[in-house]
Amino acid sequence: DTAVSQTPKYLVTQMGNDKSIKCEQNLGHDTMYWYKQDSKKFLKIMFSYNNKELIINETVPNRFSPKSPDKAHLNLHINSLELGDSAVYFCASSGGDRHSNQPQHFGDGTRLSIL
Amino acid sequence: SQQGEEDPQALSIQEGENATMNCSYKTSINNLQWYRQNSGRGLVHLILIRSNEREKHSGRLRVTLDTSKKSSSLLITASRAADTASYFCASMLYQKVTFGTGTKLQVIP
Image 1 (cartoon, rainbow over the protein chains, first blue to last red):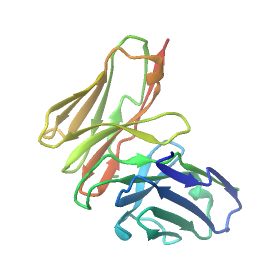
Image 2: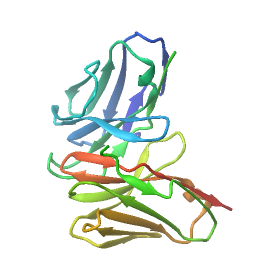
Image 3: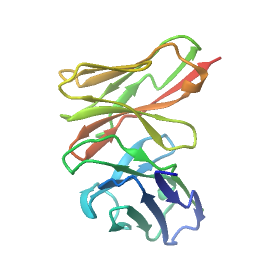
């Protein structure tokens, strides 16, 4: 069973479109994250949710909006896609409360390409 | 930039040799973690060292932490071709995590 699963795995779309990436974890974790990995492999945290509550919101354009319908799901919606949004987006989850730093479990990523 | 730094950026060794990667970070931490990323895959957690620990071992992995220098190192002993991957350190302060720039390790059979 996949612990953290993201869909789709690949996403190719035109500039200006709106798209969503879904993430689900079956580990029973309370905290979920979205990361962006650019072409140089730099990995930056975008958002973190603990038990459906937003706890980290890095400097990310407000075109990016995370949504957590329940603690097992954290989806990422992106409006008005731009060329610079091309990257690999990773979802991750971890156990413990908002003050602990447990190991994170990553999905396999969504490769977003903007034409 | 809050990005941690790792060196070397790339490392190529023969199977059986040891590989050492270094990581520097910029803020206080609760713990520091190391992850491996195979090409086209997500990151996999390797080892966690708490801020009050100086050294930790797990199988062929040895991690050291020097909080006074804000640095950590990962040693992989007796490397195998399957160890070929990118390795990232991640400094953790509560839920805030900052990843290093990564070291790309190639182990030649």
